[in-house]
Amino acid sequence: MFGLAAALVRSVFVELDADSDGVITRAELMDISAQSYRGDDPAAPANLLFGPFGI
Image (cartoon, rainbow, N blue to C red; front, side):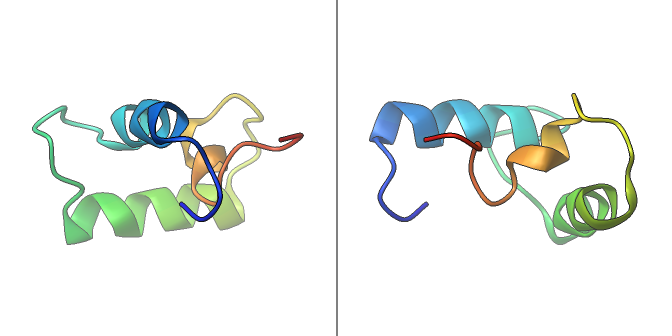
């Protein structure tokens, strides 16, 4: 992610990797995108897709 510290990027990646296999698959990315755009849970990991707010 642009302009973010490596440790922060890694922590966001871990949150977005739904099955914890070290890869964000196309299916996971589609789920993350749908959750990010259509979800209403403010605590959902998908909200980190574009980086955490307030940095």
